[in-house]
Image 1 (cartoon, rainbow, N blue to C red):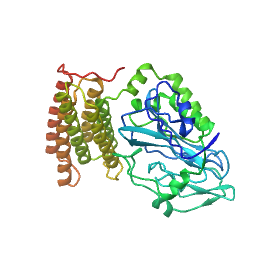
Image 2 (cartoon, rainbow, N blue to C red; image 1 turned 135 degrees about the vertical axis):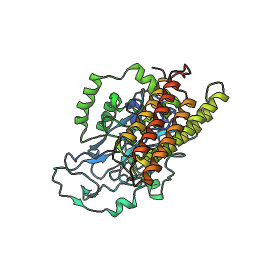
Image 3 (cartoon, helix red, strand yellow; image 1 turned 180 degrees about the vertical axis):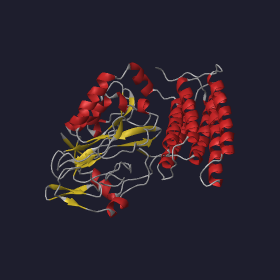
Image 4 (spheres, rainbow, N blue to C red; image 1 turned 60 degrees about the vertical axis):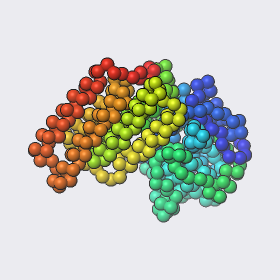
Length: 428
């Protein structure tokens, strides 16, 4: 089935009654509207799997939304409906307080996809991973991973990759995300003859929707499968996952629930992971922890002023601030500043992990988390300052002092998790 005009159908998250397949293949003009008030997670970083055979075109992974909330659809090599067609990825857009999905489509030119940097040729503007030449697709070897496949139609153009890359890894367009607007060429491409996603693409999305490891509420932004060479390979993986641990009613409830404490917990978890891996220095962790402490305190203050709840406007404001904090954490984990994982950083990570667990379980309120994050930020900043003054290392006296401070922080976290001051966690 083909249709004209831009595929502007907003698959806006929150669908319970409609299936994912029905949403995705519906024509743009059908006007299917389903609202969601929380942004999709940041895009995960992954490696492109090798090309399965000449003629396939890369389609990047994306966050979709189903009856269990956001889930990641792995990037995959796909065959186009016919020669001469290119893939315009779908994208999330934020407008009038909601996040909506603009469905992807096949067409003779790549249109606007929100400026989202999906990678592997989709840097936010057009597609630079290859082009059609005389009915045969030629690959840009500066982008494509050929693996062991012999490809004869190849060229190299690294300049175009840089020129068409937007340096922002947010997963949506609009306030708090990527501020991009369609160019004249993209607008023209939007009005060309388009083809909807193929049956293979929709099947691939449906596989991901049934895979518990792909749920954002379960993987906290790090999907079990980020990319795959072909649909059949992932089908086997998703079947194994769904049989071993099917998506439960509790998963669906948790995935659809918007609870600021869950978002706060996820951010603390990401800081902990960054410290353990060495992707975040103590100084960077201190920066991120101060930001989280400020947001935690704001949530606490707003709830106190409103009888324990947040207004819609307050939720939107907090979500926007967490989007900015999410980008901050991502940038600090990928800016090239790394440290060798060590005991001091692992202790910091463990404290962040305990705060995240307290928020998820409801044992810690936002106000309590604000205090623990503030204390952790002070300790992390002290570690950073001492290392800077000593050429990157701590002396024995400094290690002892930091350990004593972490002991105090540990007691504080334990007390706040067991003081009978709790909040109701997302329904399970």
